[in-house]
Length: 545
Image (cartoon, rainbow, N blue to C red):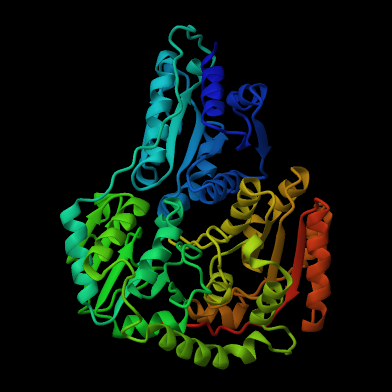
């Protein structure tokens, strides 16, 4: 068999059924002949984003794959990979590579070298006989430790070189998991139970580790409130009495309220990084549970820590807590549930005028309110784009079950959400998938609506069209005032319709329910749908601090 055939067989053995790609790469056809479905995007970054969204929803149990040609294809994919790296998402990148005789020659783009700073691991396949070994190493890194992109560059010679059947020996990589040191768990739980107002901050690793059940059990056993990072949103049910909601650039008042008064924050399956993650309060005791020692003592100095798989460590903590406080746990000794409910009621009362606003142009919060009413949020996967769609949506969209919301934002590239939604729909075709984006983001990625049409991936895209690059004017006030450099224009519903999608423009709040239902019906009939909502440029967001 050829090198390409060997790689395709290994991908199939690892459970791959489809892959995103942009030609020209000889591996695409070899994989298709092996029964793997190629989905060709309109541009490379969208294909990387699709692989990213798939891996997130599959929790790394199956890995999203993107193939691209050497040179310009690999160059164009760089931004999408950088975002996946920032958000710690496991995806496999398989770019074509130069012939062995031209390695290192100008103007060649050597992917495995140039991608070194935004991948977990890269390598160059220079010998066909090494394909099983290198693919095994790639999937081992994809399935263990802190997630991240992995890249294998395939020499053009090796892609067509023959390797003997005797050399080809591949067994899918089995995931190995470790629990934490028992003394670390004991010390952490002891200190946590002594705290007067402890808070748990749960990250995306809860979802990758499929540890929501254990997190809920530990929270209920100890009556400790739980907030999530933006990426961790949906890792803890937001209708739970101990749920504080999400804290990122924007967030809920409950999260902010408890962060101000806490004396102990336990980060579980989160890097505790800055940016679009909760900021740790000064003076509080900090503890962290992570599967990667690289995350310890990076952004904050830790008082306690435990290294291990989130699900296994939480099980250890449950047993340790029961040993210290009894099988039934402890009651709500601090009246946390009532305090959460009181703060939430006050917060919602303040925000209800925006959430239910009848103003025209429409308030974007009203658009989100009508979307929430129209769908079964437990059977929906919702995501957002960068900027105000993210900041509006993340505090108020109710995430009730794991992986019903894709929160992201460590790099915040415009246009990222559309590819995520396409990949999510490939992972969970039975779910309603919604992407909310702004008009600037549509300009970055909108033509991949045609990818959805052509590939029959029925997602719903909602565009906030307020005609302005919201908030950018503060960074370029003179240009904005004199040349209106922050203004945008376009009829994106017409663009989407011309690309083959169901499309409508909505001008007033009373039009929203009918338009949303027609779009959902189109999705059920197998058609992608786009709703362009004409909104105002209000900049108010729910700050949690």
